Image 1 (cartoon, rainbow, N blue to C red):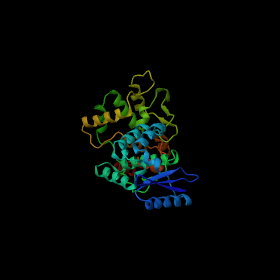
Image 2 (cartoon, rainbow, N blue to C red; image 1 turned 120 degrees about the horizontal axis):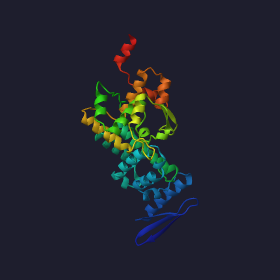
Image 3 (cartoon, helix red, strand yellow; image 1 turned 180 degrees about the horizontal axis):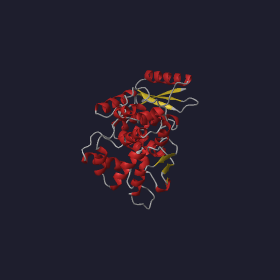
Length: 320
């Protein structure tokens, strides 16, 4: 039931209703107060009223920090997601109340990112993280919100990369690498292991010519066979007291790879392209689809096909 009290020339309206928190506002006239109260009580009566006061009191930035503290650490890609959290924290939207952020705000952010040259695939991932934050805020934190990301158009994904090592590029690349980076690149080419899998590799996981990865990106363990060249690369590295094969963090190897490519004048090659290279070489060596899938850890054949780029000249030779 609503009550109206005149104070200092203004009208104070308060609504108390069973099952709802008390809500009040101040208006210039009694008529305005009565219209507001009638609208709120009608919504409460049919169950459509949403008390969004809490969402107006907390900013997107506060929710991002909570998400980074409670949700991100449990994800395998937590380090990369923290980067995305920081990206959103640096945006003016992070200072807005989370309840005031609309789909048009997110669409404007999307368009600005695309216009700045950021790839569609990257923007998709940034939006996916924000969408998950809103989902958590609604389902677990109890905020009365509508997810503004779900109703906007998503950017088109980039075309899958098909870059492979050409001519003498592998020799030049390895010559430009230091000892540890050379072993890292060699193992990437010989095993198709992901960057994070290589960085986390431990000596105790290696038995003979097989390394058992206990926890991979897709949530399952995987056995990866090691070629003689891969074993030689491992043997070239000194044993570490902590049991790890490689000493540095993930991003250090990405930057090291970029420096090596620049030093030997190799263009348009990224570290992840080596996983494409390795996968294609497995097929060229005569392994069948299921054997390659077991080595690379792809969950589906469609994903495996995105990493397979066989050279037409090699296929022509097979045809005779």
